[in-house]
Image 1 (cartoon, rainbow, N blue to C red):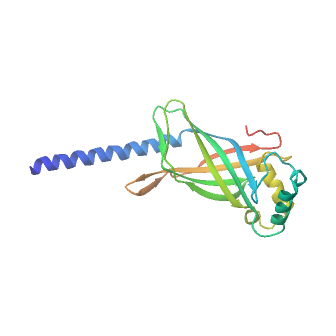
Image 2 (image 1 turned 90 degrees about the vertical axis):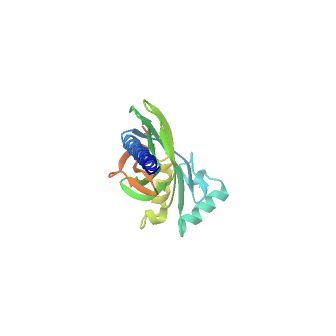
Length: 201
């Protein structure tokens, strides 16, 4: 009986060990996927949608008043969704349980966040969308700059500004093993430009 229990325990430990190794391999495969920033959408400044707008004169009276008041003082919340496409060209499934990210605009760090959601990407060319919901206080992120500068950056993020905006996203996937987080040692950097005729390519 004792020998039989010992065999069962040994098999259980072996299966658990294989499962852990498989998760580690899937995360390593995730790090070797191809990442692309495909677009920014649902851009809202102080609760007002600015998609398709290039000037505060293009807003209706109510939204223009709201934006003008927000630009004069207090918090200036900017919200948008960064759409990332992940392609797995490898021969093994790629997966992760958590994704830490850092957003930089024109080389300046704006905000950090974390996506707590398991994502699996099929082998041999599988694709997966990775939408990241971003929220930051533009006044805090651009401390010391004018209201016009903040408004122009918001328009640029929406892809409507006259000059292209360089957007960089640094991501670090991780897996959860027995309640413990195992991270990749380095961030993966994804960059592109939006607006000003750049087109996000």
